[in-house]
Length: 89
Image (spheres, rainbow, N blue to C red):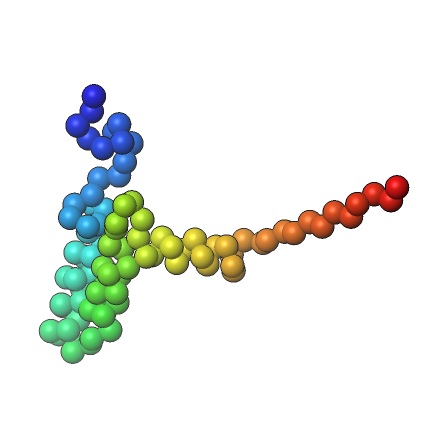
């Protein structure tokens, strides 16, 4: 029996984010605060906040994952459809 979830195969998470996302959010927050205090630029903090919201994970999925899958399905990957006609008897 393992204490770690999914027999040591799941990704490491902290609070509601994966550790990779927490790193990105932390670096983005530092750059955003620096940009806000030095050149009064607000868009970096907004982008960081939106990224933090989109990467919140519930039951191993996030809104950003859903958006990526939807874009791949509708835009990125070619969809093929095959119609077969019944042979003449």
